[in-house]
Amino acid sequence: MTKIKICGLSRACDIEYANALLPDFIGFVFFPRSRRFVDEQKARELKTALDRRIKAVGVFVNAPPEFICRLYTDGIIDCAQLHGAEDNTYIKNIKSLCSVPVIKAFSVRGEHDIASAEMSCADYVLLDNGEGGSGCSFDWNLLLKMKRPYFLAGGLSPKNISEAACRFQPYAVDVSSGVETDGFKDFDKMKLIIETVRASHTS
Image (cartoon, rainbow, N blue to C red; front, side, top):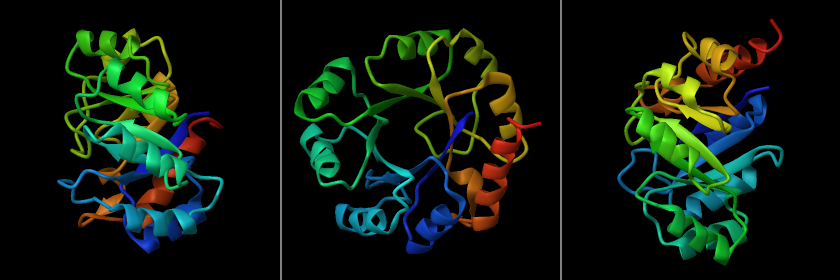
């Protein structure tokens, strides 16, 4: 069954929503330029309140590996998602410092991006449009070239997420702006997305 990640949680009520709905993953964005940014202390508070059945993913852009490993060692994150220019050398450096599972994000514009994702040494890859959080999708037909499991992100909404889950069967779907109203997480939209994905595997 396709797993579900809700990214960009930043408020106590966001955690309450997640605990009620139980997605497989949630995301804390540690990129200061993001409107969903949380600092280390805020993320620690939110993770403490998070249901233990849900894995917390830290989202980073060219962050120092030592910072990522500290958050992992301190139990603030369970996985690291990389959205910058991090290459295989960078990922291997993280792995030499700690055992955090790594998700490497790729902006998909053509077949060469799919090929690059295939060659990543990350534990998982995430296929997105642009820098993430844009609310736009890419040409999903390119997914037919993908041979390894992947997280699918970019422009996912209740209108298209069932097709994404059924037709392409990604390892996980990753939603952020698609479950927001006026820039904040919306419980009803989160609930609809999660129910739609899970229903797509039983219909």
